[in-house]
Image (cartoon, rainbow, N blue to C red; front, side):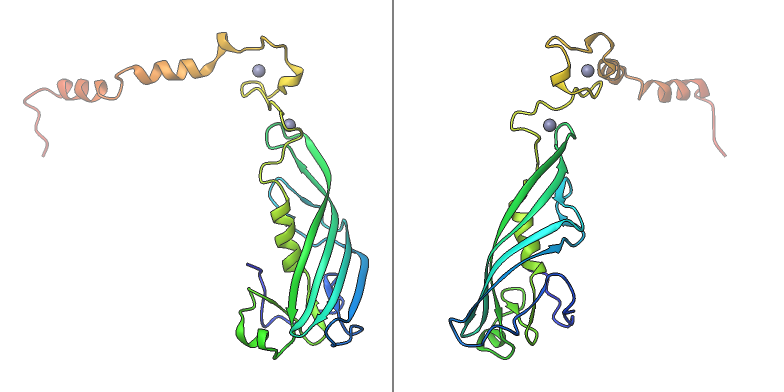
Length: 206
Ligand SMILES: [Zn+2]
Ligand SMILES: [Zn+2]
């Protein structure tokens, strides 16, 4: 599920690459990580997501387990987007739960699982970004709304139904009816038959 690149070398300066150097490799050892880092680009969905560079607040617990480091906690971030019905701007705060194992190199888990199943430590480093991306995408609504019962826009004039009178209608000038009545005319066959008749029965093509 996660988009790991096995041959990609982690950059210790990248905001979402965390260092476990201070965490003793003894099962049960714990370390808390609380910090704010800038959000990477394209974090979210088409209509809603975390703006690039916005503060991601990491509140994580790193725990040594026999096979690696278990990371759990939350990431909180602002989200911005627009209503899928009326395009009004939406702002919210998202808290994404994280629980992810990062296996030690050459551990049994490392040898017996794929990297897209279980994360990996690279030396003391691991990359939180794939798990964060999955968590954010799962937590965001595919069809965000400014409010649950948003009525959307009038398809004819594009004005929000909230701002239109209850009897608002375009019935008299609705262009859809004109288009439909054109479809009923048998214009498709008529020109062909007329053209054939105009040529006359004696016409031969060489
Ligand atoms: Zn709306
Ligand atoms: Zn209208």
